[in-house]
Image (tube, rainbow, N blue to C red):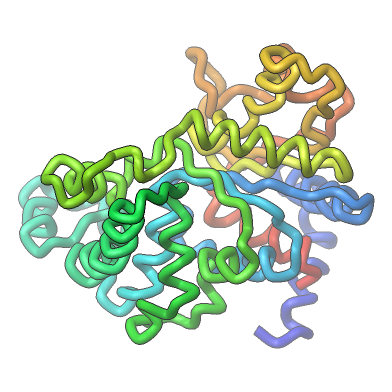
Length: 328
């Protein structure tokens, strides 16, 4: 996209996005810029299937331009950006996915195509290709007695070019490549609930990997997040941009009450910005659908923290916000 066209996105938003969810989108983007202008930093959380939705096309540039300073994501989002990087040409889109019968779904399974809404991830070309390279890193670390967080072997194979010959998209459009180039902090709670997490568990069960503790666990991830939060907020206000809900959002936002209430670090700053893109209904105790004000009662946000909820599809909203922050 040429710069003159990119700038037009921000102009379009300023002109047309004046009310309701559209206005909240603009307000949230402007508040993000205000946070950065004041020396602040931003943590972004990724739930759902944002990597399969190719959010990396805009998120990678946000990372490169230092508009994003850390990511908390599901194991699925961590790996699926890499799957898309090496197997994009083998993905299949199913526009009429709502019309599929159980027999149609079974036919996809038999072709080793795993469906995510309208997009099928090819098992052999994506999952198994990545598994082969990552498993060698797991086994090497296991034999040497080293331990790592889930994203670190992926950083290694990106940096050493182990999969570079298999790239099928421009690596500039991969948020994981951009993150690896900058050693961006990534926190992955519940990693075992992912394809690579399943692969690792199977390797531990089969004896290919001697210790399941080769991958650091969720408590260690929270400890690492706590230390990073303390170091970061010692010199900068820190914002929280949440895409979707679930563990990717709930895990990192809890670091503040943990530090204040449990570790007794009473001078810990609260999150300085909060925005969530969500289509969850606010009901029945749902975390994903909880309004930001509820987080005040848990000691996560202050009464005067800028707070935004954009009730829409993140695949539509997030790239627009990123474009605005980037000045496109």
